[in-house]
Image (cartoon, rainbow, N blue to C red; front, side, top):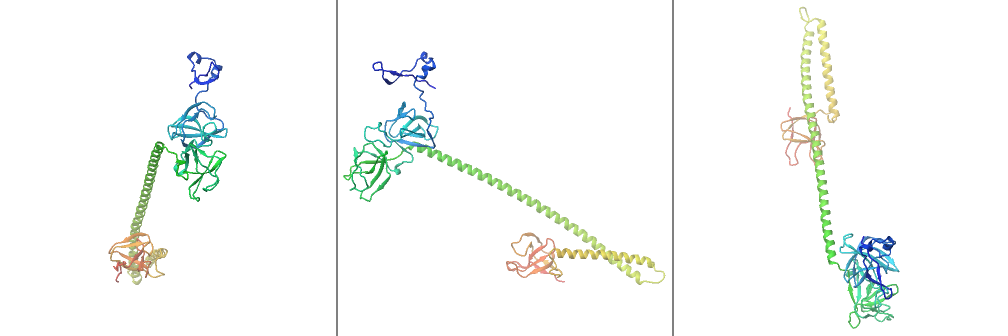
Amino acid sequence: MPKFGKKKKNKADDALTSDFDFPSEDEDSDSDDAAEEGIPGLEIMDEEGQETLAEPLRYMAVRGDLPLNIRSELDSEQIGQLARGDVVLVTHTNVQAGRLRLRCQKGSPLPGKGAACGWVSAIEGPADTENENEGSLNLLSEHQRLEAKCYTVVAEHASVRTGPGADDPRAKFTLTEGLTFECLEVNDSGGHAAMKFKVGDSLEGWTAEKAASGAVWCEAVGFVDAEGDKILKKLAQEKQKQDQAEAKAKAAVAAAEAKAKAAQEKAGAKVKAEEAKAAAEEAKVAKKQLDRERKEVRAFEAKLAALVETAASCGGEGHPLDAKTVDLLQQAAKKIADQTAEWEAAAEEDDEEGGGGGGGEEGEAYVVLAKSTVRTGPDGSSEKVGDHKQGTTIIVCEQKLSNAEGLAVVRTSTAPAGWLKLKTSKGKTLLEKKKA
């Protein structure tokens, strides 16, 4: 931290002056007591009682030579001044002797980017003005642009009335040149636009932009910071681009995840379908093998039954089979007949559990004339389970005259089992009853 020297004393009257006597290297090595007698370092620090603005706010000076102090106290060391039109960023506030003080930085509209420049008064005090402008605004915030209707008196005097009407009594004071005030209300019911104001704690009334003679009394003034606006606009555009890029990236990630999930589900469904198809093929092969074996058994049963019948009807001496052997053959034939009967009963139960039979009605054979789609239900919206190719013979065990689409449909127990249309919606025949 830089060290600053003591204020010189005038040798004539021992009065303090504003000149600085910077210490030499020898003086810089003096005791701590000597250093404590020096002027505090010109560093703007946090103070007790100050309030931090949640969002720093830009202010523009509306009058020149505004003093900047090192502390919020009105009589603290002046370290600079603001010219008319200068823009600062206010970060803290404090109140001293009833006046609002603003701690600010200069050089950038962004917090922490500018350089700290001191404390300034928001309004003029009695010691700050040569005219009767106590309470005049020193600075306008960025919220007080032209549409906020702040005015500066440009005439030597601007008349004040107690009400908005041209005939209302004049006040005992006038607004003097250089005073800046905020218009609280506009009233044009009296034939001219009257502006209501309040300056300080006691001065309030109505004035106008122009006198009745046309002379200009007040001019509108508003916050202007073209360079700062340009910087903030650029940052806003960059942020918008960044937000759009982030949103696009998130959308891309979400789309990729959805695509991957859909592909995974599709692959899973394909695996299940292949497994189901394989199981169906295995069941089909097993059924064919079983049917073949049962057919062979039935053929053997028929031959055995014929042999037993022949043996039983041929009596007499010299027959190669005796009675005991014939009895054994009859017992074997009965056991085979019982087994085949169980097979037939089981087949009928399977048909009934599958919903077939049409209330006990036997199935009928149909020939597929054109490739036909098989669905889980009679309506076209039902899930597709497969199809029967042209030339295939199927067993139809149930029929409906009309489905949701008004078409006649049948149910087959032949795998793949399900519902088929007899004709297409255009009248093309798909199934035909097989001729005996």
